[in-house]
Image 1: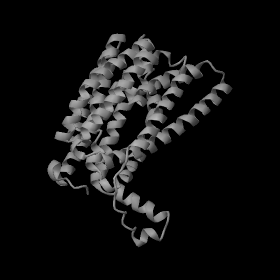
Image 2: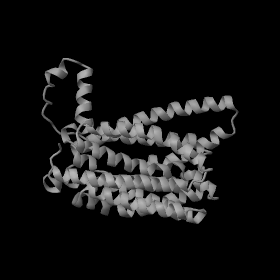
Image 3: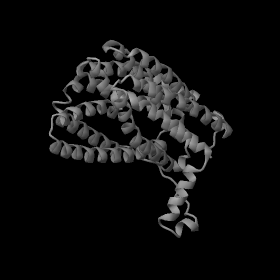
Image 4: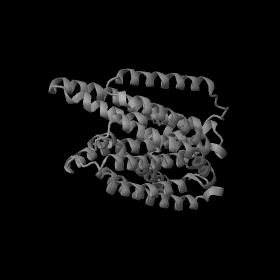
Length: 344
């Protein structure tokens, strides 16, 4: 959650960091930034996959939606603090802000690794002879077959990936949109802090609904509501205060969706192979997010830097995700539904 709060600040800082440089130094700075950002993304994907697998092993499914709601509440509190007090200073003091965030994450993750203990599990079954005979090709072939050939998991990947992509357009260009309508970085941070405070109040009730009614249902409702809200934003976000309202709506609806589906992997993917299927979803998401931001940049340039169009793109992607969630729900019911679900 804090990563979502910091990303717009990174974009704004990078714009100022590179804008005044001559071509030579600018290329060097961009290369250094790209190197470290790539390292950050690889580390983030690795850690998040392992962290999701750890949650899958140690948190009871009966309360996992509420666990994620409380987890998100902690992230929202840190996001409120960051955006209310620090985002206005991000361009001037980025070294200390990034360094402090990295130190905080490192200490917190180390404490978690020391304190959270997993239970005892039976040893995994031996691999089939066809896999054991090949140390590389066999396991890779089995991984691809298990993850990418069953329609149920393909619908899962489609729904969740489109949902993530739908949140990307507004998040990617939000700080540039804010500046284009005359909003200061400080007021932009206050806008985020307000929306996170609203999301904080909604987090636990939404987590409880996820435990009771299932994340797939909340995923559909979240994407359908987001599609409508972003279409409103497309027509409304024309000045500073209408952007303030539209962006707050975006953040609250996006937060409600993310809280509602936070436990969807633990509820749908095979428990014994959660890390495998979560990584398969992560691969698809990574490929899509390699393509989406450059494509968005070209599109916005073609639209004359009219940033309202990111709301339109977000609405269209969210509509596609809502349709995919309907297909996922039908497949989910074929596998036993909310009362008797068995992962295929």
